[in-house]
Amino acid sequence: MNAQQALTWSCNSYFAKLAGTLSPRELRQALSERGLLAATGLTRQEEVAAFREPRTRAQVQLAALGVEGIRVTLPELAEAYRSLAAEMAAHPETVATKTVSAGLTDSASFGMAGAASLGGVPVTGKTGTASAESGGATHGWFVGLAPAESPRVVVAVFLPAGHGSDAALVAAKLLAHSPLRKP
Picture 1 (spheres, rainbow, N blue to C red):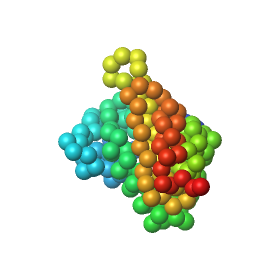
Picture 2: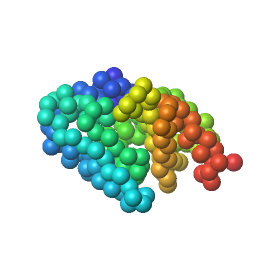
Picture 3: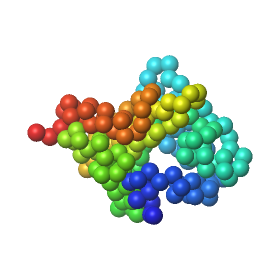
């Protein structure tokens, strides 16, 4: 599996292996550079991510996957995608931009976030499903960029009970009623 396919199908083992090449300091730096460990100013009385500095390779991998040692907020995810969109717009011809763009587009077209494309607006994005801190429930989220070809908005949906695919469907419903929808 390559990076594009791993984004499309949310392959945790691919990204865990990649994260295993980072030191704890490099992981913190990568997360911080995208706005994932600080207040964004997008909401009042905003909470900030909880991040426990990893000490081992396994802890780095689990933190990178969002499984253990980290808890980010939806505004932080939205800021990370805004930052990603700006970076991709500034460097459209790089291999990294082409790979990430294709992976996010495929994810929201036919991959794990495929339901997001049902809103009539071309969208790129990813889903996630996270375990609740207590109990057996899961949280679902979708974060994406729309319209896909020239992003103008970040679409971020969090469901306190559900899966990422459920959040992608909510994103589609929001996009279906947005001014971005083409007649």
